[in-house]
Image (cartoon, helix red, strand yellow):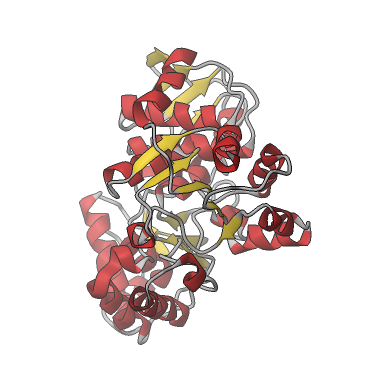
Length: 394
């Protein structure tokens, strides 16, 4: 793989330990995927933030990098294991909080923006069409590729951080235009709600596994529906890019795109996905915000409650950027008056949720249901926002 003089100097250790380690990771990836060269990136999104997932070994690795390392491009951070300001109120154990704060300090020394959200595009890191990125976190990756038209592979936390430190990533995969064409056309019914979008994404991810779907027939879907659709696709499958006819930027720029393989999805199949994944539970926690909620989702839940106070633990997970916007609109106070907490910096998938006395949840996110059931061993009920409001108020 061709390296520039500066890249050779980083690899040779002239820029310090962190830059050398970063280049070693990137060169190894480039060789595996037969990249001809590196490409400079506009931004990075780093996962591997919760101490629950990192453990002491991950923390040690970050601390080693942070001794002389510094990111070269704007770099945002995925959710950690707790709300940094209200972890005591959440019920997070003190020993976990101490370790989590050490992780955050290491990222701060590296110059990473402490956005702590899986929706960086709602928190100031919104790339442009054609921008090369190094993003990790599956739902952020697929949104950047599909909805924004940027270019990133589905990076892991270490490779995204390495790219941030080096300011570049190997040129392969979805960075190349020829690898972004659809591999299968999907005819699906018109989507009415975010819940249906999440279900369709989860169904298609499970059916296709990998590839790039071109979806036709779902109508003029909203950004929140696209967010939910992508999160579902990326959770049940290894999909990092989709196109929607007449909606997503590459489909709009190339209306004649097509694929040889074609499948059709019926509305009954979409509804059936919720029945397969959902359980009949009395939830310890009701939540929305996986991926992190938008202003519109906060407003939708408030409207669905229709002035009723919640009678069980009800949390909405959002970035601090979205929370601050909602605060200015008076929405946070209105939700708090009804007993709803807006939690930042974390989500149930990466928080030590069992230590909070939670063994069952109700959510509108198929992504959350998939991970909480399969990785967390929790019982999960899936319901649209209106159904969650009814559950919370009863």
